[in-house]
Amino acid sequence: MSGGRLAGKVALITGGARGQGRSHAVRLAEEGADVVLVDLCAPVDSAPYPMAEAADLDRTVTLVEALDRRVLAVRADVRDLAALQAAVADALTTFGRLDVVVANAGIAGYAPALEMDEATWQEMIDINLTGVWKTVRAAAPALVGAAAPALVDGGRGGAIVLTSSVAGLMGFPNLAHYCAAKHGLVGLMKVLAVELAPHSIRVNSVHPTNVDTDMIQNPAIHSLFSGVPDADPATAAAAMKSMHALPIPWVDPADISNAVAWLVSDEARYVTGVALPVDGGMTAPFKIPHAVR
Image 1: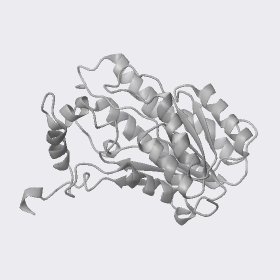
Image 2: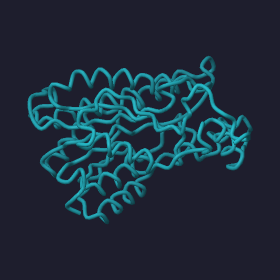
Image 3: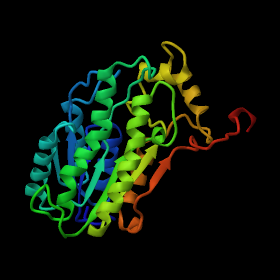
Image 4: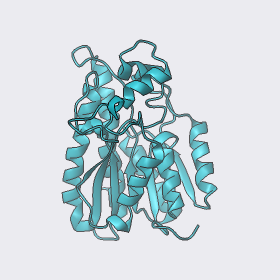
């Protein structure tokens, strides 16, 4: 595939083994990008659902290669700056450039704010907020062709997208640590957009509603959103539908990937510092009940 809006470019995607990360990898490859996948592929203590495994990462590699794009897969923890810098170095050795960064890796979990243990709070902040900063810290110099990770100096520029959430725009009970991290990404995005603009690097955040991935399709999150212990998927879907202005319980990963593909393309060449919701109307302050439509 030689055509597409991202032909000749290289995109690094964290959390690329499955879910939104896999979808982003496939979508950007469809647009002509070669892809660097970064994923932990190991358990996380505070997450109430299984994390991606090495086989998931291998599957994403296969899907990208099926589109006749090159792909590099690296197992690394976004909490480990040195590992991320090594992944970027491998990407530059393999592809000779880096143009796009999608800082997508994250976890979900829940507990009342005043009952949450310190380790649960810290693990969420370390992955969902600090891990995004470390991703950008490791990768941004490569976007501008800098020789050293500490240097940002001239080059082609590029585009960075931080995966936040509707929880980065509004509050949800039992998600204090998640909301804090996702709100923090908005501030981080706005500062990076200003600091990196002189180097022609655009930085934006995307704010998905519920997305049909393993992060929400599990018993723990079904019970959280429905308020029903051991909720079945149908009960959870009905509860999640009530959260939106549009009559939907969730969106598909591809819906977020389409937004990401636009943000990193030249079609959005002057869009920077923007928090873009893809939320089915969840953030609308007043909603018409679906039953009266």
